[in-house]
Amino acid sequence: MSASTSRSTASRAAAPPLSARAKRWLYLTHRWAGVVLCLFFAMWFLSGMVMMYVGYPKLAQQERLAHLAPLDAAAIAVTPAQALAAAGASDASGLSLAAARGGAPVYVVPGSKRQAPKVVDAATGALLPAADASAARATAAAWFGGQYAARYGGTVDEDAYTHSRALDPDRPLHRVDMDDPARTRLYVSSATGMVVLDATRSERLWNYAGAWIHWLYPFRGNALDPWWHDIVVWLSVAGVTVALTGTVVGVLRWRFSRPYASGSRSPYRESMMRWHHLSGLFFALITITWIFSGLMSMNPWKLFTGNAAPLALSAYAGEPGTASALAPPRTLIAALPAPPRELTWTRVDGRGLVLARSGPGAPQVLSARDAAPYVFDEAALRDAAARLLPGAPLRGIEVLNAYDLYYYARDAHAMLGHIEKPLPAWRLTFGDPQATWVYLDPKTGRILGRQDRGARASRWLFAFLHSWDWTGLLARRPLWDALLIFLSLGGAALSLTGVVIGWRRLGKKLRA
Image (cartoon, rainbow, N blue to C red; front, side, top):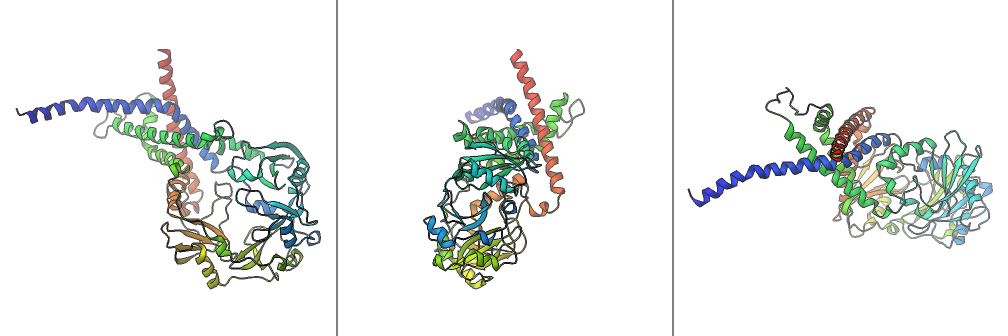
């Protein structure tokens, strides 16, 4: 026998022990890591079903407008130019007027990014100070038209319902509990004196079984807050690993060719082990998919963060005009068929406009100078939109008259359900390296959002895999509900049987 033949024979003889060792580590990894992680799996599946119907508290635009009183022209004595001067600003773009503080009309002058806006009294022109408890109670009472009593609950910097970083400029928040039938809790900005969040008692209670536990918010707002993102990421990574090892173990233990002596293709006779094996094989793919897509929701290691240049919004807006030339609110209100609940000044291609909103539906567009109704010239709007990405050609515009797989609306309680998605919309395709898409409302000129390759990848790896928000399926409810509840219950059964098996084995080890 040659030396090479001897080495080959020795190699073949050594292979089975290595394979057995690998299997042993595979089984041990799945068994002991699953003791803890199956608890998280079960929690994610069960809380995910709650989130299908009760989302994390948020204040949607339409909900906010519904609680604002219509503007009374007689109560407004201050012009936009005077309000801007009081706030030390000159550009009217972004300025708004609504009865949003204590039920009285105020101008809201936007600040820089991550800074709270300034608030100017529309009756006196005074720059209003930070809101105290009295102002918060007045705003809360006005929210329901003075119908219900308001109980002031002090200020909070952050609690179980206010983890959103979008609220940072408004902290600390005044908390006011209302005596309405839904027992609504209002959070009022200390910076502006306006309601920034509402949560009914039902929403608050269900959130402890839904979003609060699903997103591991017990780790937020305390000493672990700086590590919350990493905790979620690495638990998800470990979860994917456990689910994958469990799938391999399940397949290895299944008899495909012939059954075991018991007549079953699963070797387990004990009911809990047997159900864990069967449910694992049946629901393994959805378990791996949901844990992986949950990991993708955290944008781990900035996988979806691109280096695209910011949109040139100033180039799109054009040069600002003189604030003193703007029509006074009484002229704008008189030009409308009914008093609006909010006026917002904006600018597109150097033309000042006002968006008047009274409730659901598209706002009415008026010229900011003469209050005449305004309709965009499509060619001029296209030319302005082409300036959004300097140096990148505008390759095309697609008019969306219906939702598609990238531009679609969700229920108001869903994670992104508060974001308005009007139709029709323009999808602008740019020829930059990131293949940027920009969505634009051709009726109002508002920029509705942007997507690059990273955002579109996130849409599939997170939103599609995690929420199954395929527009064709969402339009066929309750099919979407039945399918997701069935898969969630299957995943929960897999997880809970794993918890029982793991703790039984751990108990035996501890007793031994």
